[in-house]
Each structure stands twice: as structure tokens, then as C-alpha cells.
Amino acid sequence: MTAQPLEIDFVSDVACPWCAIGLSSLQQALARVGDDVDARVVMHPFELNPEMTPEGEDVIEYLGKKYGRTPEQIAETQAMIRERGAAVGFAFGARTRVHNTFDAHRLLHWAGIEGKQVPLKAALLQAYHGDEKDPSDHDVLVEAARSVGLDAERARAVLESGQFADEVRAEEHEYQAMGIQSVPAVIFNRRYLVSGGQPPEVFEQAIRQIVAEAK
Image 1 (cartoon, rainbow, N blue to C red):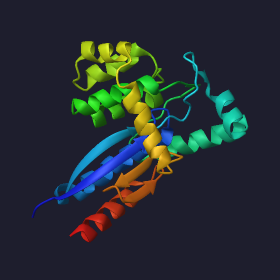
Image 2 (cartoon, helix red, strand yellow):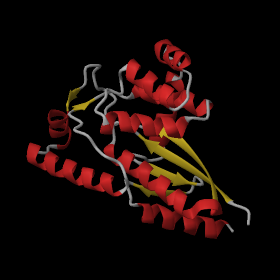
Image 3 (cartoon, rainbow, N blue to C red):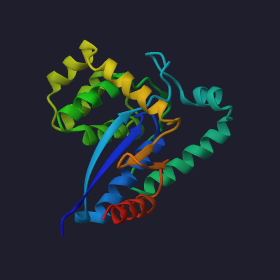
């Protein structure tokens, strides 16, 4: 039986914990459907905190100002996120600071050209959410690139040159114009949207239904 082609556009931010959960869930769902689907996953940029300064900000202060939450409410949410992450095999670390992710998105754009976009995204999510590394630090970004088989010198050259900034901003504007206001936003075949860090079962059900309709 021929595998059904499936385009998956994954709109997300490295700074988003639900994106780490969502990507792990999506990958588990794709493993479950196996050879029935020939999936092509493309990462697209979204910045939760585009105005963040280079030094970053304490996560409790930032979330308190942005969402009006108390430290206790934030702790409860983070505990729930850790639990949801563990259920899909993603171990969250402390995540005590919020950082700017624009350079990470530029590097991800280049990784897409090199055919390593999804593994780099997973490595960056692990670096920030799992290992509490700064995703705006070029050394962190280069090491993540190296870890997935990308050329470290070329990665650093991309970062230091400012390359792909216009492309990233254009993509951000494109998805904002489509009405994407929160992430992860997972779009199948440019028609079907699944929002949020859903469990694998939700993604699997959506994939099977979309494939069945395509046939």
C-alpha cells in the first residue's frame, strides 16, 4: 500500500513549553500511524516575547506581568506542564528565565534548507526547557546545530551575519495574518488546524481522519 502524503506545518516558538509537548506528541502520533503516512513536517516561527532584551527576564516576573498570574498560579501551571511533558517523554527542567528567540528562528530557517529543521527544533527545545540553556546565546545555538549533524562553522556564520532575518519576519507576519495567535498551531495539508500541546491520541485521530478523507 502506498503511503499517503501529509504536509504538516508546525508553528511554534522555542520559548513555548506547550510546543515541546506538542512536538513530542506529534512525533509519537506519526510513529503510531507508521507507514500509512509519508509526513513532511516544516517548522515555522512564532515569537511569544519578541521585545525581550538580550539579558532575558525572570520567568516569574515576566509571566506575572504578561498574564497577571501570581507566583503560586505559575508554579501550579509549571507542575502541570512537567506532568504533561513526562507523559510524552519530555523532561522539563527549572526554566527560571525567559529569553529572546529570534536568532533561534533564523538558525531554524537555515536548518530547513539543510534538511535538519525538525531535529534542530527538538534540540533547541531540549536545550531551553530541559537543560535551562539560553536560546539567544550563539554558543548554545551552534552546539545544538552541531549535535544534529549541521556544520558548526556555517551555523555560526548564519548567526553572526543576521542572515534570514527578513524571511523569518515574513513568515511570522504570514501566520499572524492567518489568525494564529497562540502556539503550537499544527496545520495539516494547509487546511486542518489542531491547536495546543495535545496528547498523541488527538494528533493520531486527526491524521487518520485526514488521510481517510484524502483517499
